[in-house]
Length: 481
Ligand code: 4AD
Ligand code: MG
Image 1: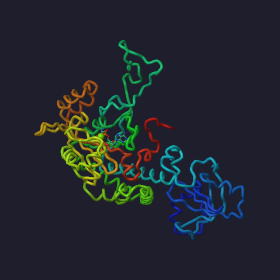
Image 2: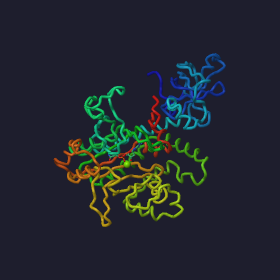
Image 3: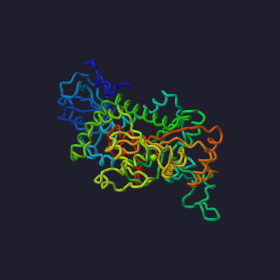
Image 4: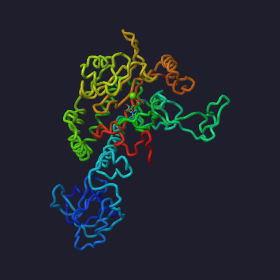
């Protein structure tokens, strides 16, 4: 390779020698100073052109967005805010960029605008920082589990089951939609379909993960999952990445410990390995908050917020305690809720979750022992309590500013209890024999959880819209490229 990555040059301690860089023009000032970025750093390197001895025709082509190759001497910079610069000896334009038409101007663009040109937003410092942090977090997830001897398991993208039983699936079919085969009573004849049955994109790798955990012990998945829920919010994607560990012989407490350790580990890893990116994102957020009324501004800056999570135990609270807290909340707080929680059994809305973490506990909260009625069929049933309430060994981890970050549970290992719950929620046992065999042959306590990767990236980057932490967001009416 003839060129050096800019990141390496920015930390140089030796000067005078000739270097070659290749990158894109961020700005070109006074016909002299080019800020060049090659993606390796959120910082640019400045290249100084001897404009008197450079043809005008060439100078005109140094425009924002143009790709170029610069050969020159690395020197210590006199300029403010930079240690090094390149005194240009030779400059070649590799690819022109029409300044009149190029959508990215050398100024700050709103995130909304950048979402409209999502194919170009990688080129901004903000998205460079976000995707570097995303990369660090993904790597940290694998490192965490690998260091603990978990097996990374690839579960299928196309499945025949609905793990969450919520019916929010994208169908997969090879049938000709203009000529759908029908059975005698008019139903779609899925026997004619590619797999000979109806299939969908996976909503979760959990059920397959359980099969593997009941043999390999500790496994995790980390892959794309799909939900056709029509929630147009800043927290939902139709395609998102989920990390799902599943552990044999873990009970709910072990599951909570593992989830808390994982979250702290990956946040610390991002802070340690992306200090410049996170510092940039912190400053970006502070700037943005200046436009908000004082009462709406965050109490802690991004770095303090992340450090706070590392240094404090998550609060572990039962659903029943949470409902009591919500019921006891002050009348003027209650007025702010769109949905009033006044009965045991109601599902918590994100406004309630956020009240618990942001106003009441002011830290991450692990909510456990939810009503069976509002949770998935596979969760371990608790004994009916003194009030006749049926609960399950579920755990949701709620984060300030995010709401639900993790959903998990201890699994029901008792075949009869599992079968009767499946019957209650109309899941046909004959379609789940492969799953039920884990309970038939050597059933054992086991637990797992799902961590929504984009919600984690949201938290660590301080971004506020989930569309801005995934390279190619998929949301209702939005599947460009
Ligand atoms: O709570 P969920 O639905 O749990 C499961 O899918 C379990 N099978 C996981 C398990 O126990 N192995 O989803 C888990 C997490 C949520 O807490 C949330 O962080 C994220 O996945 N999530 C979404 N993230 C972005 N967009 C969506 N539409 C999401 N739905 C869930
Ligand atoms: Mg959930």
